[in-house]
Length: 427
Image 1 (cartoon, one colour):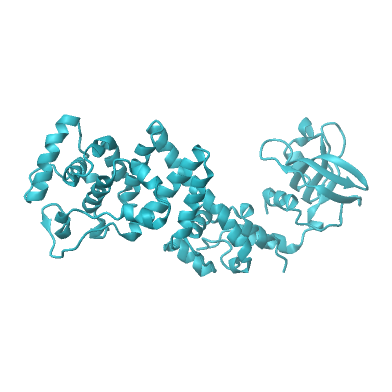
Image 2 (cartoon, helix red, strand yellow):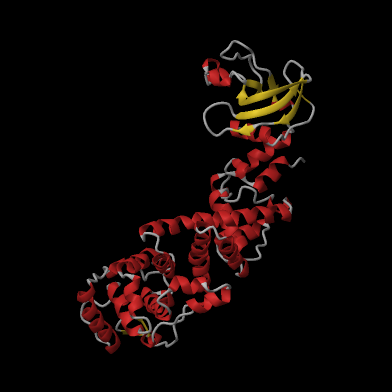
C-alpha cells in the first residue's frame, strides 16, 4: 500500500459515511479538499464538520501517524492549518508546530477490505501482465470504457502533435514545409522513417514544387538525394535519372545522403525504400501545395486518393536499381500505408492546426477521420481484444494504444477511469 493510494481513497471518498476521529468525534466530509501536487499539505481547502462544528482548512494523509514526525511536520508552519490528520493506522499522537494536536481519522476502520485487494491486484506487477486489469476489464461497463476512450484518443493525438510543434518551430511556422517533412517521415514506415525525414529535409519542398508535373525530374532529385544514383549504373532509366540529377545537383547545391542509412532487411519488397521514394515523387507531382491539398479533403476516401500513388513503370519489374525481378506488378501505395499516413501524420497535423488557430472544426474533423477508419490490427489491439475490448474504429484503437503505453505500462491505475471502477467495486 502507498500513501498515494490513501490520498486516492480520501479524494474519491471510498469510505463509509459514518466516520469518526480516533477519540470518537463524528466526522462528516462536506468537501475532501483539492489534491496538492507540490510541497505542503496533501489537500487544501477541505470542509468538514467534526462533532457538529464546521471546519475549513487542510488535510494531511499518511500511512501511519508516526510518519508526521518522520517527515518533520512538527517543525513546519505550513501544517498549522491542518484540520484533520488522515492515516491508515494510528500509532502515535502528533503535534503541530504551534503546539496544538490535530484530530485524527484512522482509515482502516472505514475502508472495505476489497479496496486494498483490488488496488494491489492492479499495481503489483505480475509476470506477463501487460494489462493490469486484464481479467477484470470485461466487468467494467461499456459506457465507462467508451467515455474514457473518448478522452484517451484526444490525449493520443495531443501527444503526437509534439512532433508537429517541433517541426513547425524548425520551419519557422511554415505549415507547408512541416506537412512535407511529417508526411515524408511516415511515408518511410517504422524502419525508414528517419532516413525519409532526412531526405525531405535535404531537398527544399519549393524545389520540388518547381518541377510539379515532371515525375522524371522529381524522381531524379529524390532518388539522387537518397544516394542511390552514385557510381556506375547499367539500366537506361536510372542512367537518365543520374544524368538529370547531376545536372541539377551542382546548380542548386544538393548534397546526397549516404545510401547506407536505408534499410532493406526484413522489409517486404514492395516496402523497399527505392519503391517508396518513387511513390513519394508521384505524390509531389500532384501538387505544389501538399498541405493545402490535404486541408481541402474532408473524408478518409478523399485523403486515401491523394496518397494512392504508384511508382514509375521502371519499378514494375524492379525493387532495386539494375536488379530486374522476374515478377512484374504495379507498385501502388495501398490502403494500409495511406491509412497509416492519415492516422500518424495528417490527423495530428490537422489537430495541431486547429489548436493553434483556435478552430475547433479542424480538431473535430481530425477525430472524425479516425472514427471513419477501421480499427487497427497490431499486437497491442489483439491483447485488448483478448481482454474483452471490441474497438469499432481507429479512434478507439488509438485510445487503447494510449491506454497501454501511458497508463497500463507504467501502472497509472489510480489515474485511469477503468482502474477507478475496478478499485471501488465491492465483492
